[in-house]
Length: 162
Image (cartoon, rainbow, N blue to C red; front, side, top):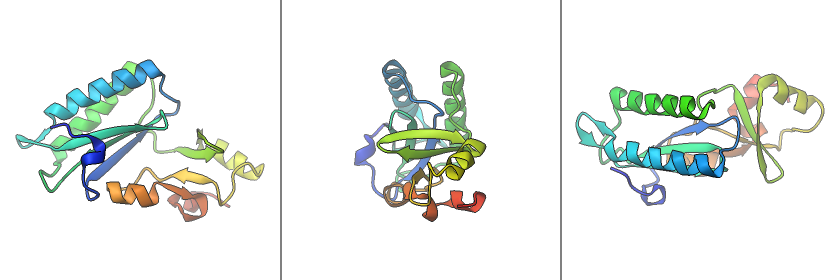
């Protein structure tokens, strides 16, 4: 059952999918319609999931479920992954590549692979204060506190020399 993202409680579980490029306005409309339809019918063991979504920065798809209403199961999570994979094919984009690093450059969100990201660090274009996106957040509350964080406070730093 679809619910607006901002109506879901802070404890709601989230999944963040990041695109390597910005969505066009037409893609955003299409993605939003498809996600809404998917969420209207998303179930776990025949129980409707109270779920919402947001598209942020024209690049991130965030799905969320109020698990106090009904918890996600392995099968329901698999359904969402298959839905995201279908979106990837339809839009010819990658939404599940966890080795792409998203970061802010001024007010723009950029995405680089690891080697490009490391090059930017070496050139001084990215530093420990650069805001990166932690797509491993678990809840809306966690997302609000820990999604956009300085590189020095992120999991990314374990992979890099900064």
